[in-house]
Image (cartoon, rainbow, N blue to C red):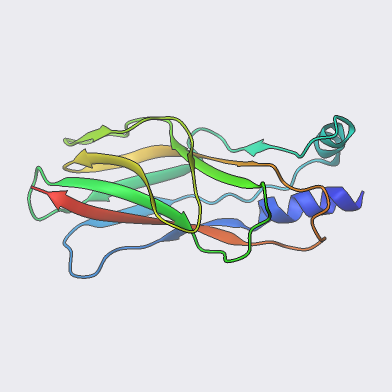
Length: 164
């Protein structure tokens, strides 16, 4: 049963952090939060299979909007990273875009999962305003010997204008 508490602590601590760059006219808005407490049955099933548990949120758990550029057709990209310094070996935090959202602008980039680590990685790019882009979060490889407690991290989303 202690292992169940370990897994639950990771899921309950995952949050979302919004970061905007000062001096830029663009805005990035992130809404949603990942707070999940796994049912003991699901975790025990994973333990019986002798593997670390995996968790994936709903396909639109997080909504991302990129808007208010000084140039209507501005080219931008969204980068992601996590803020926690300590991270268990073999454990992955990932995010993926599951849709295009809406708006006059366009969005590009693969829809596969992007690992969120301590350094920035590009999640997607586009032009103009895009609203309510659905995102999904995944956590895998949670060590079975992780100390009991609450473990917290945030995903930091940054928008950068890269052209007009």
